[in-house]
Image (cartoon, rainbow, N blue to C red; front, side):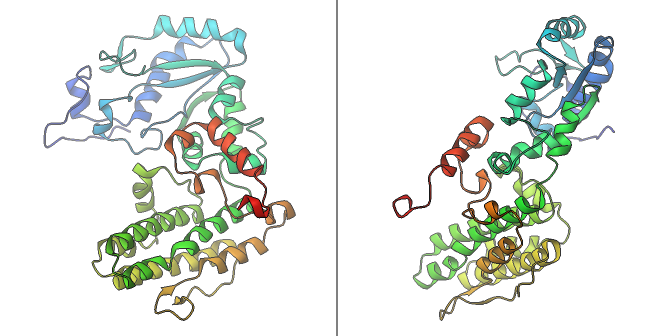
Length: 368
């Protein structure tokens, strides 16, 4: 489907793009599908292959707009073949068929020297190993799940597959569609633990007159609640740029409460809206994962500070985990619940190495 976007004011874009494509925006996934259907697919007709967009970018998540066209956007494909021996023939066929531009969009490197926009060709096993850093992406273990950033899972299981008569890519996407039950409970428990650790701080900052500090805490809690709601609805939380966009698409989530919390000038109002949103999250946790915890806000100890008490939900979730090894793990959760570095989370190998390091750290008195 072609989506029209009429620009009401000038937009800075790459000068290589045609005026027609600026004035009539087509989402990147649709452009990539056309590239496969009109060029790459016919060129590879004699071969067994897979063709997809499961790499990275706003268009893979379906969040791209005309603004996205100014860099690293365009007709892109990941083509996978059976083995390394089949790569040269596939590359040669594509290079012979690939035009310099496709519907007015460059298929080769940008004129200004930016990243290549186009088609990559890899052996299926090599691509999956590089894209996911998993020993067998069709059979992920608990350690595998906890080492994969949700942004990468959103991209890999989202995106689009245009052709696959090899089967490995489709099988890997199906296997990684969502957490197994025990892992899901562990990750949600870890998210509730993050909320529990900071939910009284909005009030404490307010009591001592630290308005800026209280606003920072409120924003952190809002982000953690947004991620929690996405996890409860079986949606992979994307990274910061698109977190709000993904959250806004959740029906029934307390969007207005979180917006009001961040807009409030009085810390009591911030706290009131945040605990109301957390109570909704508690109700949804009970509904989705079968816990039976009272989500009513309550005082934090004897202080005039209100919280929901995220640790209560975390404990109830852990109690429902059948795997004793996972039930005994510290509630650090998946790698992007305790790592906040783009340079780690955007590289699956680094994320996996970080997760291995955490697993090997132990939990003795000298490790705290």
